[in-house]
Length: 245
Image 1 (tube, rainbow, N blue to C red):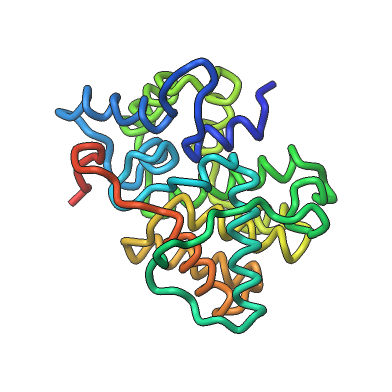
Image 2: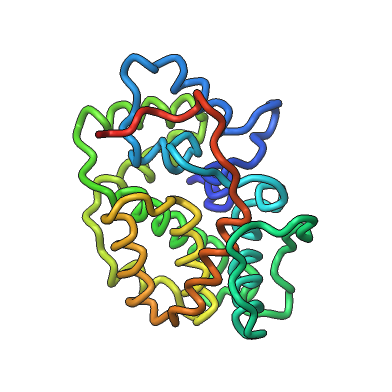
């Protein structure tokens, strides 16, 4: 069995033990090697492994590890929302580093009523669902994705889990039910927004639908949008596959 927290770290681009690069770096190399037949924008590996078009998570959020980063971003968005602050339209200069959520709040992984591992798997499933939001991944694309996962070295069990989730139909009822508290519902949405940049109607529609099903106020969603955007940077030229159209 794989370690759900390590898988989440890998998918968000954390350092791979025993290497000098990240999963994202390896996946980026794979895209360069296969640039004659690139993944379509929005395909699972391109999005989850950080090589898709748009922006990618960076900085302190990566250093924290996946679970703490998602919790920290959700907590920060919630605090700004409760304080009545206006969502920032761009990262502020000298912005303080992202911190993990306080241990005495329900945003901290140790407070998960269903256990850290189970909730982590829910977050991973949320990321996969978001990655699939812009359309069907056909057999050819799935084969390419499997190859990228092997190159990334996530492990055979984790690879099987990811590919099985990729093949599963969207089930928002089960996904939403996996979040047991208001804080977890906000973290689930934050993980989904971290995975994709809503550049298509399908992606924007999916995030809007998810926010509605999770019962998140529009103003709180706006704060998540601002907080996640501030944690991302533009993908360097040459590391992203060509768009589908």
